[in-house]
Length: 378
Image 1 (cartoon, rainbow, N blue to C red):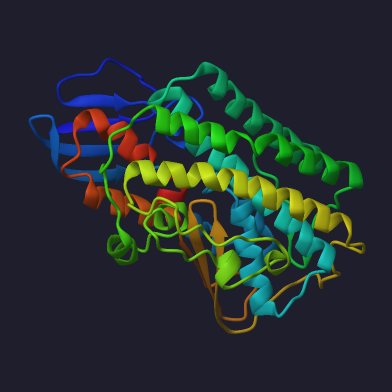
Image 2: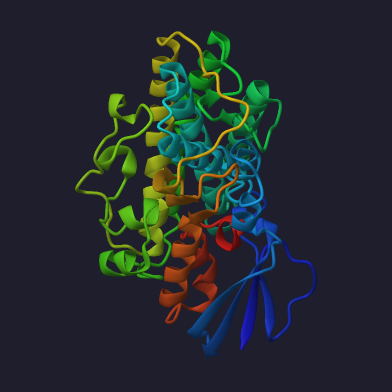
């Protein structure tokens, strides 16, 4: 048995313990995940993915916070796209309360959701120039783009990592025209990175047929997002069940000639293409928000109680469908608030397809299936 520890090497490798470092900007750098493999020569015969103890317990923490306080914790599990966490929570609670935010808040939430998607995709794709197809110049460009995105959200919220911008009924702050212009300009600068990453993947001549997640397996394990679209399974909620302002944006159907083989390379190529598509959506959303005036929040009573019942809402997070199930007994705090995270589904599928993978292809296999440790362990 050999245990592959994801993250930065903290000590020397041994015959039964090795480090799998996917680069300084990859979500795996946080550690907390191990893959225990039984090997047959240099091939994985059996694999078990073990999330570490991240001291999360997010769902239980939600149950002792009132509905406003929940939002301060909801962006902590997927730290590559923190805004999407608070967005999923607030949309679920607003649905239960029959609360409609102002139109400008809806547009700005759309801008911030695509902003978070760009940040997440850049982090996942950073493995290409850092490890799979080494290119220091391209790696620096991806790193600088992520840093610029963090600075932009800090300009709006005061926080580079956890924005805490969502409020029940809207947002905590408005964006001025200069901020929206800066968001659109940054999107235009990031858009060309998608083709550059795609070219790097193809030029590296990476092995095909590694860790194949086909359409049937994607449905079995509930895989969604880019990993499913790489297998020809398109369940993008932004198009199939539009929310926020997505019905007004140019969401293109995946082209029929896209690689749908479902292997590791197909997943990376899909991510690279979606990087450019997301940049285009961010630019369009910023321009749309600039045309909508009005407030970004509504007045609420001091004490909020959600009516008795249960509510489910899902959003298209960067790694796939993120679902929230709220159960209320009419009190000031949720009775239950459960998460369905894309990281869990993705890694469950990866565990199933790792057997047959050669050890020198493990980095490619793992890097192609998106996850964040906090999103995985909750």
